[in-house]
Length: 358
Image 1 (cartoon, rainbow, N blue to C red):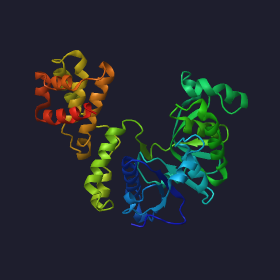
Image 2 (cartoon, one colour):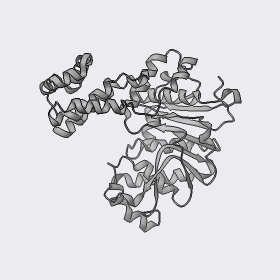
Image 3 (cartoon, one colour):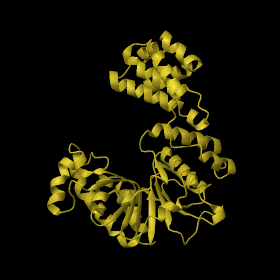
Image 4 (cartoon, rainbow, N blue to C red):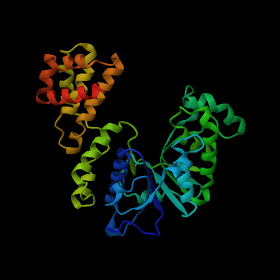
C-alpha cells in the first residue's frame, strides 16, 4: 500500500491525552486506508499532530510531536483545548492550498478522498449542518451571545449551526479560522460551560461568507454512544494491533459498523416480557443488561457487552439515585433477572460491582 503522496492535500489528526484518543485516531486512520482504491491509484497524505508518537509507529503517517508548551500556547488565553483545532488547521493552510482536519472519534464509510472533493473556494466542509441558531432559545450560547452577535451583524436566529468533527477549507478561506479563534477568545468568558463553543464560533465565522458542505455519507462521527463504539474499536485493536494493515485487519474494519448492536425485535419483546417479573424501577435496567448478553453474530458487536452493562447501571442511577453495591447485588440476584441473565450473571455482577465501588 502506498498511502501518502506529497502532492495530495493532507488529512490531519490532532490527538493527545489519554490512550483512548490515540486508539480512536489509529482506527480512524486505518479505516481511511481500508477504503482507498489502491488499484485505481488512490493515495493519501495523513498528518498526525500528537503528544505521543508511539501508537502510530506501524501506520504510514507523518507524525508531528507536540510539546506541552506548544499545546498550552494553542489553548491560550483561557486554556480552551478545542481552540487548538483551529490554530492547527490555520497553520497548515499556510503551507497547503487546502486541508481537512478530522476528529479522532470517527471512521470512514467510503474513500477519504471524497472529503477533498467537497473543499473548494467559498465553501467549508463540516461533519454536518445542524439546526438554526434560534431553534433552542434556552441554551447558553443563545441567551448570552445573541444580542452581541446581532448588534455586530455577525449572526441571527437563522444561522445554521455546524458539527466540527470535520473541518475542510482552502487556503484562500483561511481567514475564517482567524475570526473563529478571535471569537472563541472573546466569548469564552461568557459561555465557558458551553461544550460546543468552538463549533459555534466556526459557524459564526462562516455565516453569510461560505457555503456549507456535509460529509456524513463519508464518515461516521460517533460523538453519541461513545462507549459502545470505543468498545468495538478496542476489540479490533486487541485483535490486530500487531499488524494493523494486514488483509485480515483491513477486512475487519468493515465489521466495525455504525450501528448500535440491538437484538432482533422478537428478542426485545421477550426481554420486555421477562422484565415484568421485576420491580418497575428495575425493568429498563434488566432489558439493557440483556441487550449486552445477546449473542450477536458480529464479534465487534459482542464486544459492546460491558458498555451496555455500564450504560444500564448509569441509567439506573440517573433514574433512581446512586444505587449502593449491596442493593445492586440484590437486584442482580432477583430470581427473574437471575434466570434471564443465565451464565452471564456472575460476569455482569463482578463487572458492575467493580464499577459501582468506584
